[in-house]
Amino acid sequence: MTAGVAAGHPATARTGVEILAAGGSAADAAVAAVLASCVAETLLTGLSGGGFATYYDAATAEVTCLDFFVAVPGLDGTRSGPMTEIEVNFGGVPLRYDIGGASVAVPGVPAGCGELHARWGRLPWRDVVQPAIELAKRGAPFPDAQARALRALTPVMTRGDGALAYAPNGRLLQGGELLYHPGLAEMMELLAEHGPTICYTGEIADLMVAAARRDGGALSHADLAAYRVVELPVLRADFGPYHVYGRADLNRTIATLATLPPLADLSREERAVRIAAALHDTSTHRIGDTTNIAVVDPDGNACVVTTTLGLGAGIWLPGLGVHLNSMLGERELLTTETVPGHRMLSMMCPIVVTDPTAGHTLLLAAGAAGASRIRSALVHTLVGVLVDGWDPASAIARPRFHVYDGVVHAEPGIPESELDALTAAGFPVRIWDSLNHYFGGASAVGRGGAGGDPRRGGVGMLLET
Image (cartoon, rainbow, N blue to C red; front, top):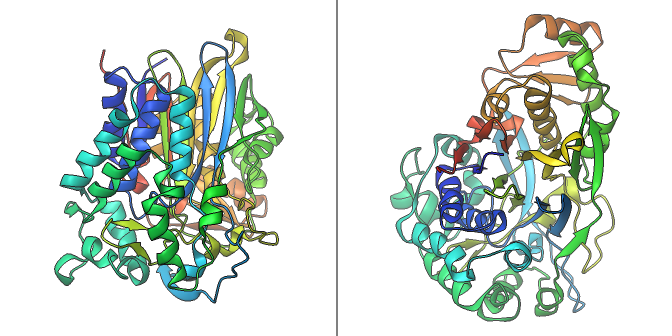
């Protein structure tokens, strides 16, 4: 099994590989990469966000799923005020979001990183955090893909301290320029010195509560002190001769994979129709500001982590470069009554794939960003790698489609015969102009190498031996 890292930004992936080269485990590298993503991919994630992790232990072939997603605040009885509605235009479609202090949920990223490191880490905590400190000191190149997204997200990203990073000197940051958040290096230094608990019971907790409450939020010290990482049941789907493991998510990713027939036995046209039928989706159109990291270490252990900030609340920790999450403003996730202390629901589903005919050895570690397109991106990636025999990078980069409200949204380059078969099966087809951020951002490490998603500036990097 190839050791490497796939992520949504070169700096994120490089950080993970450097930790592997220093003798770190898959968990060490994943945590370091997550923290680096909180510096380099702040349009998509951050320390105040939440996420999920799937870990594969090569020695035992055991799979563990961890939930460190955001929780509903209000344990002290406080109820939030009204949120602020804004509109962003993405792909020509106006989308409405709710932001402000009332949209801030209880963060999980610091606790999740701490739990991964405590369970499966080898290196000292400071060594794992140090790369993020150094990256925050110098800043990270801003990918073209994120620069394009920033133009749509300007109404929220340039609020408050966001303007210092995303619109320095009053001009929106362009692709290739340096993304630098003043104060973020100091925040990472505090995290390295005091550990994740500082975000829940210490100095940072005080700042977070005060910032959210000044704008009508319900976040309290009681909410932060009560937050815990939760171990989840692991679901399995048979995908051809292989086993795919992950958690139960709003997209029903594992259940969807289980409904697919043996795709290798079908023509490409038949396959497209069966995949489209399985992916039929009626959820709300959302951009899906999320990022994913997949790591495999030299021992064959894997750690896949997906995190998100939501759109971002437009509220920042003063002087520390940390954008508070807006997860309570993500309307499609509010499918049940919001009870203080309860976890919010999510479409994120980091997965691992094993071969039961070879002692359940690891074949692929993968995940994706993109809200409802997470499932689509993962299905197409698995088909490319496990059915068509492509390497992860090629499988991720090739055109894919997503089905929304009965319409197949397709990237250019899908064979005409497959599009004709979809039309004949009753699916209207809309062909987009190019590979697009809308179709999600996958990242995967497998026996054929490592790949990140070009739609979002992602890359894969292998550990040199």
